[in-house]
Amino acid sequence: LALTDVGEMAFMPRVMAALRARAPHCSIRSVSVPTAQLAHELEKGEVDLAVGYFPALSLKTVRQRRVSTQHWSIVMRADHPLRAQPMTLAAFSAAEHLVVRAEGRSQEVLERFLERRRIKRNVALLSPHFLSVPFLVSRSNLIATIPHSVALHFACMSPSLVGVPPPFEAPTFDLKFHWHRRFDNEARSRWLRDQLTEVFREDPTLPQPNPPVIPRRRAAGR
Image (cartoon, rainbow, N blue to C red; front, side):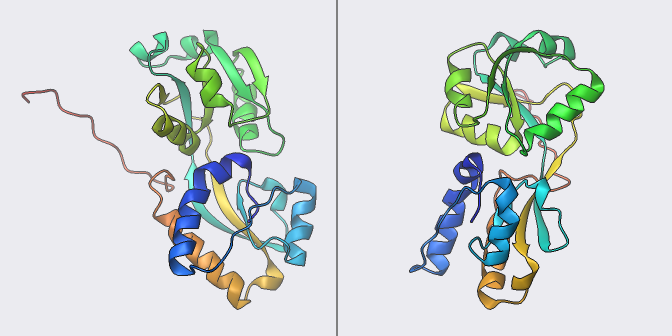
């Protein structure tokens, strides 16, 4: 399975648990492959599936299956001053931002949107890594706008972190499976795709194209 580092963090625990339950003697290999080489590795069969956001794999030779549609959240300290009220665009622009810049990754969707809308940020730190985000944000006034499922995992890992909606409607992006068309009908590849489709369908951290609305809690006594 070709995954990014943050994809492995967010998805591999469920993938491994499901596959170990259904095929207890199988072993799983997670690999990091440069984007330029990924299509070739899929064609050779060195990689069975690439899982995540890989726009460079929009090729005639590569099949795709959408498993979820992602939106965005702002992750910050639970006691951050901006948590006291709904986030406004002015507050967003003035806050100190940790910006993840990773070439060919989902963050490019957000960066292009902000550039088109001319939304400025006070960028205090640029980093190529997602996994440093919770440690940096929890010890500072930095905020970071990242995929919702990643923000949710970070918040679940630490009570000192929360995710809040951004003050704009940013475009979504799709998480997909990718495989080479020569393996369309190969039994092992089909089995693996079917198993992982079920895993992702059952994952509550992965919103579907029309996620359910979460009702507000009623005040005590009402």
